[in-house]
Length: 524
Image (cartoon, rainbow, N blue to C red; front, side, top):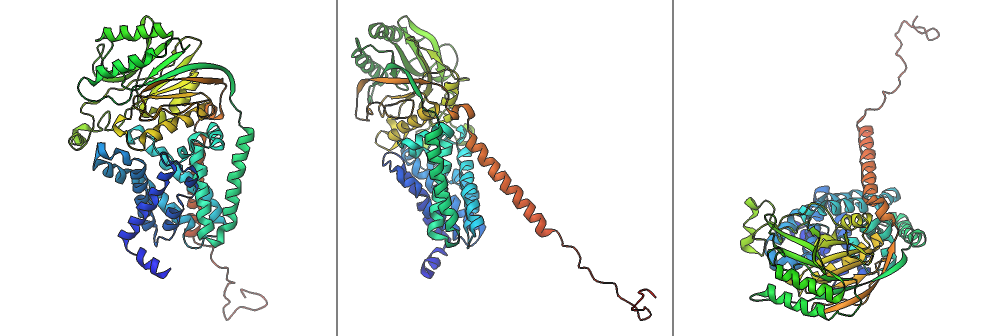
């Protein structure tokens, strides 16, 4: 143990170990998808931080681990951003510095049962604050939230319907804290066991209490995935392939056909021939077709990514312009300062324009859909608002062709399971090049995935459900509860500090008697 302590005395060795420890949770996400590992993946990082000699060193350990975490869950961006991904991970990794300080504050030294019990509430709350801040679209969005690793666990999906992915993250961190205390803090093992029991009880209660979506109908939706199309005139050749695959759906009793993100590389106002071809497909199949146009618009300046609904008579007028753009991929923040990123990676040469509001579309057959584009499916608030606005089915149109041979396609497809469970609405994740997937209103997978090697059209028979989940009704209440926990702790610390600084009452000393005073009659 002394040898290990001596080895960790080096700041560089300690930081390197923190980076590795922070990166461990990546194995809980797809493609490895070792969901169970999430419940112990933070333990080495927590144990390392609690041994930090000072609060400042603990903050550095938190920062270093945050760097490792972000770099691991976003490693597939390296071919596009090159060295810039390291800079982003360094900057955003700093969000974990306060969390590292909190870990040492509650678990450092020999904490008693009181501190150990408080840690089970404060440390998961601190983690949620990190996820809340980094979920801002301008900082890259909520990709790789710890709770999203539980996308295929049925009890976890039930919890998602109650408190969203936020509740899952809170409980996963709470379990990690409990395990870390069990293995490293003998004095606090009782509250650690209590924490594990409480987590199991909360999961069981949610399983019994939370309402299950009542299936009250079905719909048939087809996904057209053309696969990778590169080279000259790729836009026209991709359209030809999508047209051919869509014709395979004629006579299949389809209610809606979904093409992937950037499936049409030309504005339909500039290319009426393409609009007529899509309308002909709609007439032949008997279904509206949701395409995605990535082009400079003919009716207003700028390039937009837009979900456009096309019916038998042509575009219906229903259009959704993507609101949350991918930093560097679709726009460069502070381009006047960071524009050099376009010279070292595949950053956007021209900024895309943003839409202003979400849209629910009526596609006939008594069916309303709520479209999202690309990584908007990572934002739980967007799907929640679409469910509130009356969408029967959530649709995400995506394209991850740039990251075809990485873990990104599987990670992206898994997010739709959580959005479905949170809202009680089925979700279709349709892509250009895979992975395409469909999930029912409880987050269960419908059919099989269309992998990155597939060029195909596939029809899914999807159950419909209505009603309102607790998460849709009450929103991000785990985040608000975490804010209250941290505020309460800050107030208690402030009160404690004031008490320590306040001088105590002066000791009561009997008045001194002079030589002339009588012992019987003082003062005489």
